[in-house]
Length: 197
Ligand code: Z5A
Image (cartoon, rainbow, N blue to C red; front, side):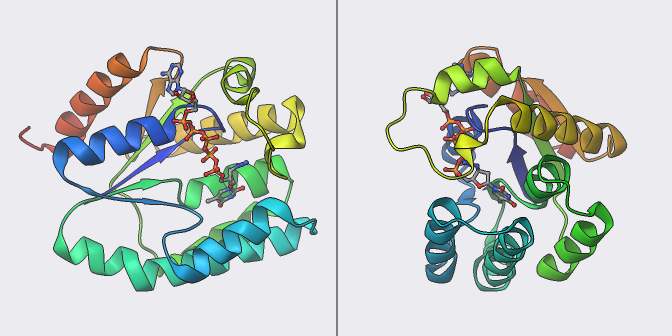
């Protein structure tokens, strides 16, 4: 079983994904990263100026390595929770940067060999709320500094994707306290995946 957690920066994805992984003893990975190559690409992606298409291809290269090296083997051993996956690329590079979405769909399929999550939890919240959580960080990365308009497009992109794929997505209110989101996520996992918890 593959569960992915998605949302704009500061939505609380990492907080939720790590809490779920700990509770259920699921393997946790974050994207981009998780492999030696992926961590190197992450560092370049977050700190080096580049064109939008270059950015897209680098995210996909990191994903391709990650799926084969880590994700498929981990799924053979048990359940996996992912902090970002294919829907991040559609939201950030597709809706945010305006790169052709059918190209992204096909690139996502190539990079993952068609491996889809059974459940994707989208933490949705106003951009201002998310920014107020990340605003005090020292040393914002290249993507974080894109500003409110960019993140409005990303948020909208996530919502469009979620509404188009209701069988896979559950949208949770990201403004709720972490404990409440955690409880709702547990109910969602139990209900959607018929897991006895
Ligand atoms: N990216 C992309 O463009 N395309 C792709 O295909 C992929 C990624 C895979 C990854 O950086 C960047 O790559 C990201 C998207 C892009 N954009 N940027 N920049 P990252 O992994 O460093 O960034 P992130 O994934 O957005 O992490 P984040 O900024 O840390 O946000 P988060 O994981 O959603 O939130 P958090 O770390 O759980 O919480 C943030 C703060 O809010 C923290 O102080 C928490 O204590 C607090 N928090 C968490 N939950 C709550 C609730 N419920 N209420 C109040 N406060 C909360």
